[in-house]
Image (cartoon, rainbow, N blue to C red; front, side):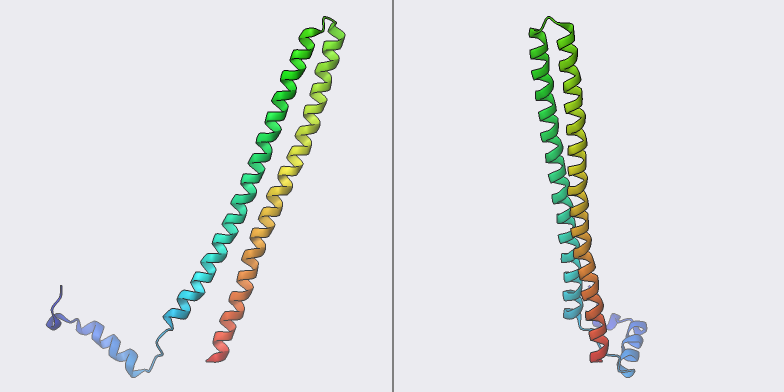
Length: 142
């Protein structure tokens, strides 16, 4: 721990210079509040993005489970049929249903992610606009 007599004259010179110039001290509390609001906006946007990604992953899992159930059911039914034509028809029907489900699920997942990203960006945009208002209000006060 430095002693009082170990003061740095260089630092003292700058402190005295600031006092003599009558430079106003920054309002640390206001600065902290400002940055806290910025951080909260970033956190909210990240939560929104994470939530939409989780919803999309859940949707993907449900689609996969349904597809696997359809495949299993088709193979059970086709094993009962001795007719190769019926088996081929059943497999073609499965392929069509799987393709349609894939297109539908992919579209839904893209919509979920797009909407989540739009909402996250709206949160950030709103904070930026408020931030600009806060900064311009600070300048007007001075």
